Image (cartoon, rainbow, N blue to C red; front, side, top):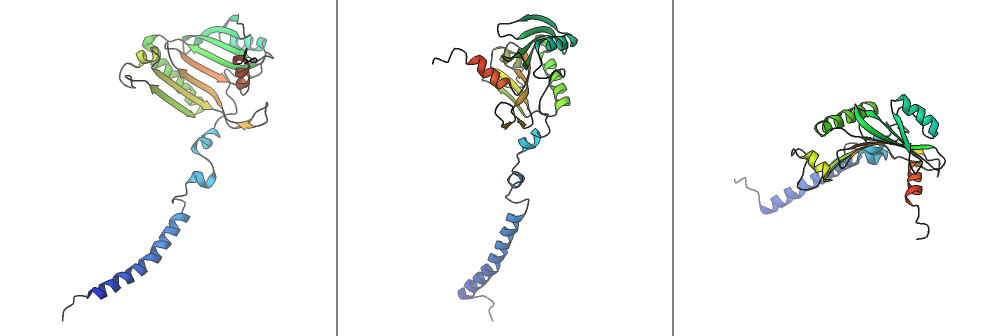
Length: 237
């Protein structure tokens, strides 16, 4: 007797197999949907992104040499002198300018104040020689990472025909064809001006042109002071 199945028997077997397979498939899909390793990510479950988690490890504010934000000019002069910086002048904005060294390189520092004479920002402009530029940049970056942990954002951008690793990085920077930008953001803190909680870049390491390293500490009140300064003369527009 032949063991071959008729077309009708084959159709019946396939139908029976399908009927057994469908419930198993449904159960599997249900288990995947309910599993933590399924399509529902940790971020979706907790409502927290990797960036939010990183921000929680950051301080509420970043301070240079522990100089408190809101300090008056005399206090800032005393603190900067204690760091080996010499007072140079006060500019038209009322900011105090100092000269000194960071990482054993010549540095010009701007300590910036709001209209009430309260310290809101400190910017160091570090001038390493060409042949030590990247060495000093890496030393400063490593020191900041050791103190504050991994940066919140870090980007290196090159315009064509330049690219990282081509051996012409310093030339690209000098021509304004490359930008290095590393930021450490604060934890979410209450803004005293509007009562809302924000996270903001409180510490930045920036390189754009002229082989200068900009190391900037900003308080929560710098944004308001920035708007005040750079909107001058626009009231009649």
